[in-house]
Figure 1 (spheres, one colour):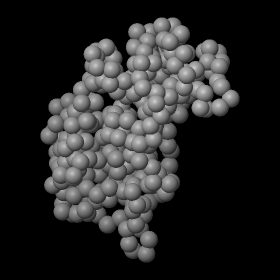
Figure 2: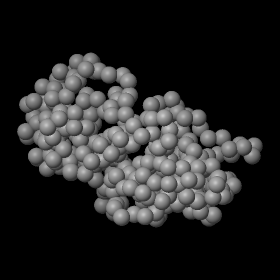
Figure 3: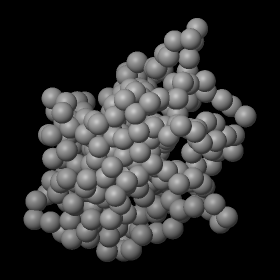
Figure 4: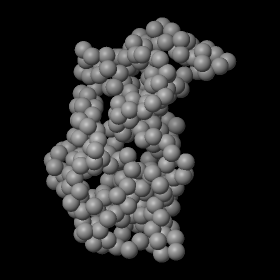
Length: 286
């Protein structure tokens, strides 16, 4: 059993969230754009941080894991639900305490986040596979409403969760940016093999076509910067690469990556009406 020594906090304590297995290199990577955070969350809420529970919870660290670790759990009063289960008044949010070296807490720079009782936050959360709490293990899963960019980030979260609430309508939206944002979120969700099952099934023909058309009409000019809405990991080319296409799908991969964009756009134009995007699903028994 793996344990994390950590003093139990009081109602006014400052809590640091971190993940136990994350490489230090993650600290230097920009956070994923908000659409990606929304797509990969089971619950997106706005609320106020409450008290930490006195007793830790022994549970697996995530889907597909077996070795249990100690989680600390804190209460959050829900003021508004942007995505996920509605009518929630209060939720339990679990986090993995940071390591302690020589009696001093040493959170990984750029990874851990601080939650303070009474703090107003927006949270991007995933349901724990076996326990009755939602997981927060990365800094970007928390938006402090009083931070300099807090309300601006929250505005983007509202917009993107609204688009994902009715994805078929959003894929047919008047604005091309809304169509692309919706396609981005759906692909981030469908092509994320959380359980590492490797098992897939096709989405509907209409939805697949609309997603591919949204990619095909997008601006494929390379952009290195990351914004609240987009970044290199959500560029049309990066999203196309997520499809996992091979020669069996009619895609002839060029010898160099720089030649892929025009080939990808041509493939979309020729196959959008017939190809069915595959989404990852849980393997039987998981």
